[in-house]
Image (tube, rainbow, N blue to C red; front, side, top):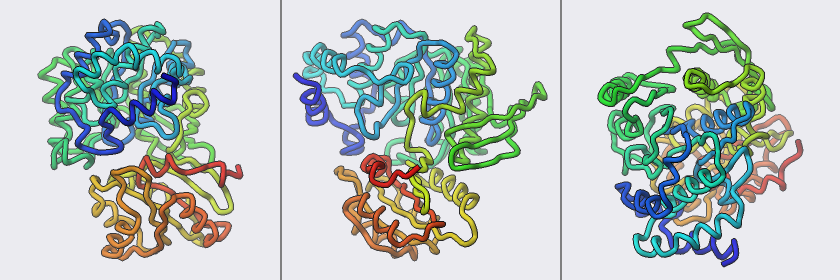
Length: 437
């Protein structure tokens, strides 16, 4: 098969969560274990860091990968979902997996795949592990897809586990309380493996402490070890001071992932870095600083507070659940001047708690409702009607680029247009149509 035929096969033959939702979710690790058994268990042959969380795990994964890469380590990175290209999911030192390897892997595993019928995610995880092992990486940063305990990535034994935070998301699969969701995420905590908790709540802290104690895993709470202050924001960089409380040391960081919410992720990354150095990894201060200022260049990361145009300012962000939208609105309250108006292009998927998101959106905003072209997407007309119940009014568009164009025509030069609500909506934004910076 050609590369395109292979990708078409993966999309057509394997259940894919991003397209069909819960029907693609496998509630055990059997398929992943059997796939990896068939390829000689590559996940046991390289070091790894395992990252779970409701929000922030993608940013944290890319920050850590950038830091390790800049420090000279051959660094694998597995994340999901992708925005434009399937190969974004599997990278080494910022370079996407080769098309030839994708084709070869699917061919080599076709017999076992046809026997056990894995999901798209299960096969992709095994592909990443095989690629990392064959390329002889020094370490891999592995992001969970959904949850933790039953996530396909959870067959690794990492040198470090990280849980960024807990919020309401995927409640149909992970549970309807913060404690239940935290318990699922805590499933990545392994015996004797240190775990960093980035941001905890009263309801979730004890869940993590109990699981870590059961596994005899040292536990560290990043929000208790670091304080962020003197935050300054520009369209290109987020600058802030970070104090290590234990050592009473304060450093200034300039970060190209410049959403305000990244200050939480920075604390998590620095806490993780400290534990990695204790395990023998050498990360010089100049490499640490450079990496955090060049995450996008080093790893190809996108979709998090990406300013793609000015006059008016157009920003894309993959915020798609209640916590993510709250953080986005907090950022907007800082950067939006008193005389500018906010325009929001939004599209969501049907299996999210749409009402919770709509209930926190500002009413003094111009709305442009849209949808991604996947089965899970809530039709733009339905989202428009549902939004009316919350006092949110606007027009709807089947194509997100048409929605952005409409917003741009209505916006003054000093206004802000934010595009958010679904990873898949952001994936369909043609940035070349709008980019002027």
